[in-house]
Image (cartoon, rainbow, N blue to C red; front, top):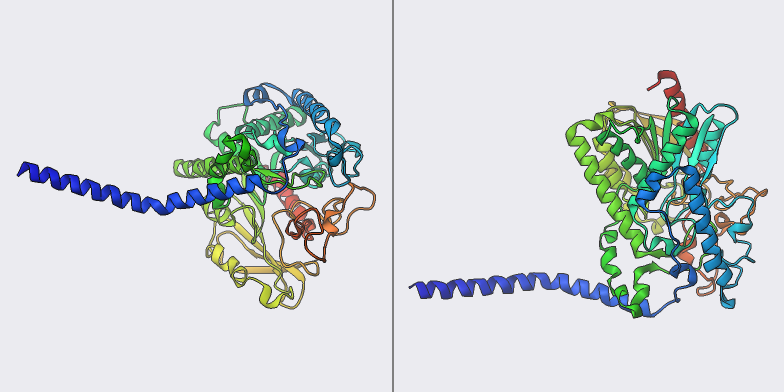
Length: 503
């Protein structure tokens, strides 16, 4: 009898193993398919160039935490010198072309501009600063993207500190080995500099765009977790622009996509895109590690939001003002609303959402799912935060209004802004929010007094395929923000409210 029971158990175990194997088969096939595609991609397409393979030597987390602003700038200068020596000065003849930002003879070469906005910088007001602002750029980006906010804060009497995040502003290869903890250390260093220069008794604002928004929020949560740590002064206000609270599900598997790169023949599998580098202040190529680090940062951030909410410490979170396009191919808008804003205390925070242009004449070409996004994403009022939706005054006009629902209420109040969606623009984009239409690089009506070799905001190409050196889709997204004046108005209101109340 015992022998029979053993046989039955053995049969049951075998069935369980077969069932588990069959259940795992689709997953294994999916992984095999992904790896196969990545191997194929690594053997086709354009080759890796010197700016993909050279990796500048950045400071470590411990070194950044131990240094000051001047020390960081000194290390940054050494990085740019090494980049010139190892990339620019070594370019083969075939790479010495006008569309290459690393070619010294190109109009796109950042080293020839009056200001190289790829580097860390400070903007100081006339007289004694009345506040301090630390401004954090996004992934693949550079300090250039925070320029207009920094200039505005300076004009408002603030000292503006804008650090270059490790791996950025130099060559795309810099992102192949960077870790998000280095970005956090740089954020801490920049806050120390702002407090050192402006003083400990002025309001501190942290402004973060995209990945910089995640860094700004995580830094603030760190101050709540360690309130006794004098090295982590808590900001008085946060301004988040298209913040990376969550990313696409694909980023979760970025590490898997790069697995074939462990073999030298498939090294290109460590890159999600390899494109010409024609933008003087932003990378076009994107390595797997960039996606992986952004995913790890957002996962750490989401866990910390949950922990701080459960502990009750979130009640001490400063007021947050966020600007976000309702459609965004880079960040997860739902995570912003459901993971962050759903947890906020009633502290005067505001969420500003830019709706799609409902007056755009795209007819049946407009994705019908986009039309209902606002209703799907926004929770019903009453909410603990102020919500502002920027949308068309009417279905036939490009003029927009702000539609405001105050915290704790259900009534919506509208005010026309005398601002308009540009013709042939159906929505804002992740890329567009930090740049006014007069921006010299990204603006639709660029400032003629400044020239960075190309006006990306004016590119509206029509023609045949396979003519441009870049995919036409990369030039499709709108690059400047016609509602930028409204954003500055809301920031000014936040500055004024703090000046009146001191809290």
